[in-house]
Length: 289
Image (cartoon, rainbow, N blue to C red):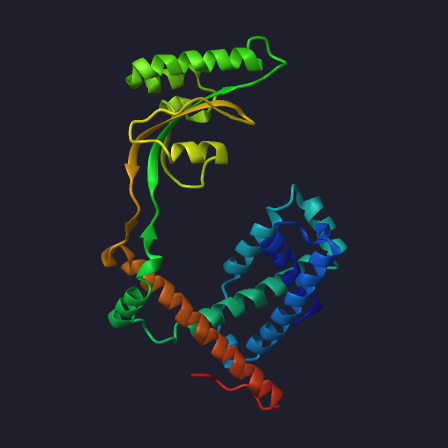
């Protein structure tokens, strides 16, 4: 692996692990990136010396597309070139690093394809041993109305906001069917345009103050006024969808994809382990099939 390849891996890892450019990482984060990049460098060097890598025909368009994706992270070409300079790279060396990375990806895909296929029996056994994992938690079809508090805006202070939502709740207690209309007219939540409809909501998705109340409501129930850091809220539960266990038919494809992914990863790890063993023994890398 070239030095450029190591820097390229570090750039990718900074984005993948921390979502930030390499130069913005803390010292601890950079140490972690450097450690992982060194391991990737070792693996890439081994893979690039295999017959599988030598047989990869990499279209120039694939390299161009990857380079373009990197270039688009920057405002303009000057910023892009300046960043390469700070990292000790230029476009040709970056292109070579990208090409090596794409070759490794292609080889690992080919190795993964050698894994034993997952049978229907494998899927069924996994289902029977792990049925407890295939549960869909309770969800509720909820509507929401929000009146915010803004002490700097006339008519929106705490007292006025509370009076306004109390009046709305009084109307809804006597005329529940008006919730959508009242939300559209008075709510300051983005859901107002949908009549306050939040959709089917699982437990834990809302603010804690709202979540506890929403999941204690009966079907068709309207909450008391709830106060949060955003303001005052009303929540209505239109329907309750109880927790249920997924059927085998529901879960079958998910199970198959999970088992295939696991099988392919095991095949790749075993292949890389064999490369390391051969490299440690000083023998030439053989074609692993």
